[in-house]
Amino acid sequence: MVVNRRHIDKVFEQEHTLRDQKMLAKYFADKELNEESRQIIRKQWEHFEFRPDESPDLDHVFYKLYYQLNEDTTPRPKKIKFNFRMVQIAAILAVGIFIAVGLYLSRRNVSEMQVQFISANGFRNQFKLPDGSTGWLGSDSEIKYRLDKSNNRVVYLNGLAYFDVAHNGSPFIVETPKGLNIEVKGTQFNVSAYRTDPSCEVVLENGSVRLSDSRGLGEEMVPNDRIIYYPGNGTMEKSQVNTADFVAWIHGKLVMKDIPLKEALLKLSRFYNVEFEIRAAGTEQERVRLVLENESLDEALNLLAAITPISCHIQERRAINNDTYSKKKIIITNK
Image (cartoon, rainbow, N blue to C red; front, side, top):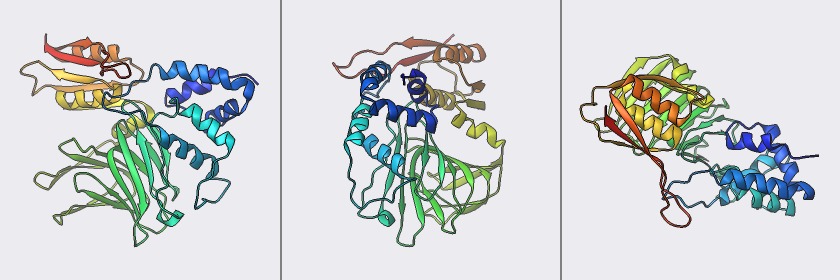
């Protein structure tokens, strides 16, 4: 057997399959291929960008790998014991192959466990929860899954996520930093709920959803509904949309249809893991219609400049110290 570096490349491109993952495990377990795999991964890792304030602590990768390799074949143990092969694989992964997607078993038994997944800035990742629910986690996002005292499935979300909820008769509740709760039983929906954003957005693809907040505000959703929740005044804005536009990000596509320039720049910053600084005047009313899929950052900025009265100037990353670098910054000015 030889190392097919495409399996490794696909992981870093966020397009890996279960087969890619299994092939990586084989490479790591093969003494003759181990060093070659290390070198390929090390070269890939050199191109990965951490935020300046991030500490590359990837201990949680160890737990995620354990969870994935054992979930279909063995019951969850009360105490985790790792064999030599697991240690070897995790040591390789600590170089960065699964980036920042993790799982923690923080309680003493399965019924009380909490599961956490994290997606680093500029990446998206698939996840599978213990109840069988699946989904995607967007850039700079995290979810924490647990069962409450009533056996309800509860997920805390900070960021962007798409959920495909398994129906098992037990309510599935998504809690957000803005105080908005989303309750479902089995459905598919998209939630954007970043702690730093001024609002929270829910788009329902299939099934039914009920929204509620601490003020007692409630709203039912049907397929193709979009609700924007404003926590400042506790109001909800409802509309009918094409849900494909709002879930396209899980396929690596960024769809922006008639949105404010400021919002477009925020989406671009998360999509490309860059920082924007607006120095242009009179752009408050500018709106953006743009669809990006395979475009590089340079191509995306050229397209943006072509449809708006702005110019984009790239400020390359600079070393902060021996271990960290600043984000690439884009300066927005008037033409």
